[in-house]
Length: 379
Ligand code: CAA
Ligand code: FAD
Image (cartoon, rainbow, N blue to C red):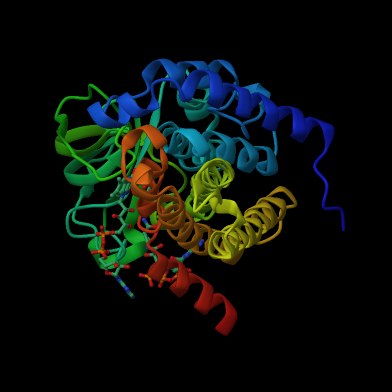
């Protein structure tokens, strides 16, 4: 077993680290405060090949592996988790879903611009009354022969206003329950499709989270992904990979906060010496480093399984569960190590602590990850 990254992995990680320091860091506090979407930065991420990292070059992507994706997600999330969630949804939910399950025509029309980063994609499963219980959908896609008539509301949609391509999961035949659900490609501007209110969030405030409303939207039949009734399984399968992305995001938030706390502990003096000389601080740093390393190994293991075509649902849930719990613990301790300075915006750790919380909620809460893991171990 080789615990070593390849030269190519190291180069990709360095490129992401440089981009995060040079392009994401300068405006990150202001974007958080004013809820400003990182539009220019996302464009640059497209130019660097970060928006379609695992997509084949044939469809405009970078053709890289999931390990590279984890490395880039970690580096970007150390600095700006708002930019990285846009990247994560675009890569692992939207692009992966289209490349793996879409028709050739769908790939030509939708995947190529998404993978190049020319446009942004969104994934629309959650509803006001259906989050964890994802089969309880009220959004309907009624079969009208040559098209589906889409009606309903989706909630909490990441990139809801900035995206132009939306993968919408909707119920066609309620009698068939989860086997009567379809995944449809919906374009911004289709008559009857409107973007609702923007959420005023605790964290990842630079990302634009909106509700979406569909009122008699005519979606052509050729925009259905996969066979009739495949929509719920489609959602579950893409979320398996999506959870690796969010796990890596949580890992990045944790490691970003840890690095800040480590440096601060060496510089800050109390009682005549750096606080890093105090065993109480040393033990906090030791626990933070250990949890981060364990989270990183779980992320890389899940990515490795995916890269090697092995089942990875339980591994991605384990990575997401552990990394998100680690992000919450580590960022809280990072604020503590900074004392009062940790509680103000200039020192970044308060934002990282607010950003960490969402990783325990979206793409399946920690409780849902435990359900997936326990079903797998009890099987
Ligand atoms: N792959 C393929 N099929 C799967 C599957 C998987 N990973 N998981 C379940 N299925 C299938 C099952 O086999 C079953 O099909 P059959 O009856 O034909 O065998 C069907 O789906 C229903 O499965 P369950 O009975 O297990 O379904 P459930 O109602 O118990 O729910 C759940 C399972 C894991 C809790 C699921 O509802 C879930 O993942 N909920 C969380 C939803 C979620 O993660 N939402 C995220 C939204 S996107 C987002 O959040 C993006 C963002 O923020 C950035
Ligand atoms: P609920 O499902 O109502 O859960 C409430 C509480 O009950 C949670 O603690 C939950 O863990 C617990 N619970 C529920 N069921 C069980 C159970 N069976 N066992 C134990 N505990 C349980 N969704 C999308 O589709 N696309 C997006 O792009 C997207 N982006 C998001 C961005 C943000 C900022 C936010 C806040 C959410 C986003 N979501 C998105 C939605 C997200 O996936 C849901 O919020 C999440 O799945 C939880 O659903 P819920 O909010 O309805 O909570």
